[in-house]
Image 1 (cartoon, rainbow, N blue to C red):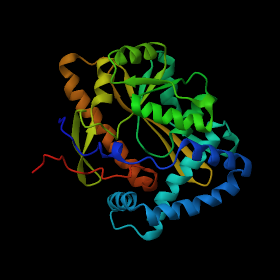
Image 2 (image 1 turned 90 degrees about the vertical axis):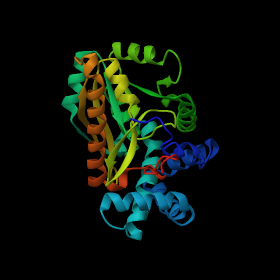
Image 3 (image 1 turned 90 degrees about the horizontal axis):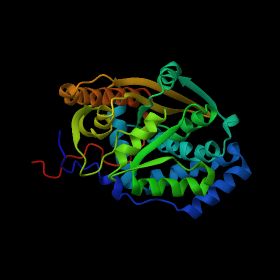
Length: 307
């Protein structure tokens, strides 16, 4: 494992496109025009990013080549960007409780129900894969599924500001990482039967990572989420909200690891195995639904101190 700058912190340097004012305008237009009409605007937005966002386009092309196993065609590069735009657009409706507009399938529901029935909470480790809002939609339809997100304060402020621009009542329950009592807050939520969500495909420069093969080349993945789950002796599920086109989404819950009875001496190996299982699961989804992964930067960038 390594704690050097893996290059993945590059995502934090990417400029935010848009603003709260723009989000409010887009929200107003989307709700006034309705989803079918406002979706027409997305083609122009996707085309704009294809033509005038070279950094994102380059990253998309590099990722798709790995996921597809060949150089992507222009139409496939457009589809990747359009899938991302569609998920962002649908966020407006999902956060305003317009679930009637969508056909949402749920796979692995028995898995999450078993976890909830135990009453000890669990960790949901996701990725920038599809739509997180569609997962939150499931939580609002099932009151017993309460989700808190553990994330760094800076990211929490940005996300909640964006959510407030769409629907002030849709604010995230956030546990701020990087503070001295973060683990105590996570444990308290878990003890209440809350599931704690974390992203496993982005890391900060100072975070320890585990390099693993991913889509044919080594990439660094954070070990923090699995290490926290091991310390607190909780099960871990993989969660995804995949966009299937049109108004269709698929929410999937999959078992990754169970640290409930893990002994201290076995913790390190168990954490490493869990991260490997996460990466294998993410790779499987990326190959099956390649247009759903939205990390538009050089994910495989080598460490700066690499020779």
